[in-house]
Length: 212
Ligand code: PCA
Image (cartoon, rainbow, N blue to C red; front, side, top):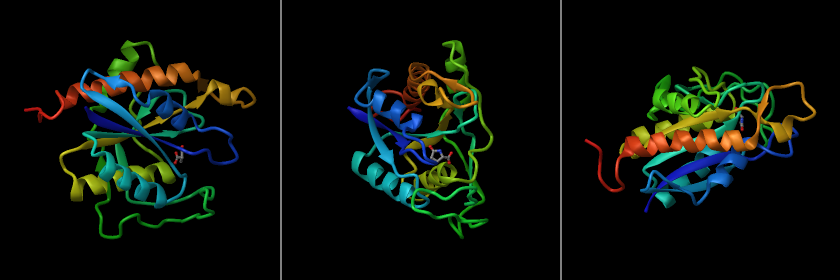
């Protein structure tokens, strides 16, 4: 069975959990839309290294689609990202203590890449299933944007047959009990991403058959 690679990040900024990984590991092994199996991987919250580990996972798993997940504390909705930009600009250090300011990710790369996931249809399906979702027009300038850009750069340069993109999720309620911040229950985040993956699977068509 062909694979959809779904990644989440390790916790950062003193958190014990990262909802993106909790969602990815909840979905690991599930079958999406008859033809695709979810393979989940956890990435370090470290500039550059997350992208490198992601590329190794893509080479190993050979997925038809890659959906990276990340935490966006303070957001209220599940938010497929539209665009990755060629900049690293950190407000806080990453998990390796790096704090790049105004540095390009790929000095010779394009300014930005659009997601190649069907983000509008993903949002419509999630909203139709009662899950708060909207398109986001910025993935920020921290490790999530960095990883999203490196994913799209790799796809553009070396693996044009796969589609990829990024979804930010809010805090999960289990994590936000003692925060003054919006959150959604983990079960809702999982249901939202599962719904989005079904749309990705239907955009891909049957396994092994390129959609025309
Ligand atoms: N969120 C961070 C990095 C890791 C994560 O889950 C971000 O939005 O950049």
